[in-house]
Length: 65
Length: 205
Image (cartoon, rainbow over all chains, first blue to last red):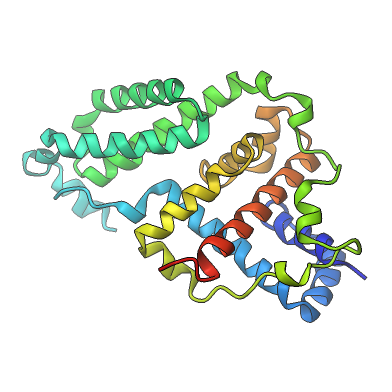
């Protein structure tokens, strides 16, 4: 059985490489029972989106017209 | 996003903006902030921004819209930053590289069996993308980024800000894929923890 440390590591790696079928299956089993890692997984995507916005500075794009 | 419309707009009327000193100085500030975060060196950041602005300025006539100019000048800046990071990679010592050894954060977050400590278990973030509209949030985001150890911040920014693929980063920094993935994991773990504590747990006003 996969623990949270292993699950979060895979959730992070899924942003950098495709996971294997086996990895996906064990991860899904873990997250179905662990709300902490479920939240962690969603937040990985959120942090990626936020970083994109931060880098492109869309948040303070108030250039004078 | 009609290019026809954009092309049609190239003309004197839309060039006005470039004469506006506020426009350039504002872009310059944003670029400096971006470069400083990644290079962590004031002098190098200033140089990179200056060079990028000069390169862009030579071609300013090609840009009908200020936003197109901005996108382009940031693209030039990103390339300068990658060059500088590449040149300075020798400064990254082996001990700084992500290895499989345990990390201080592991004990903070997980118990001996590798499960979350009860008070560290991630909570649900309510409407996280609403936060991005809040200037205060970006201050917190920046604080959390700055709190990352330098080597982690560097790979995180190359991956998420400059949007390089894993293998490009590995080539640039001479890392193995597994090194890189551990480092990205550790930076995300820290950043997530910091954002949750400083913002999503009600640190916000």
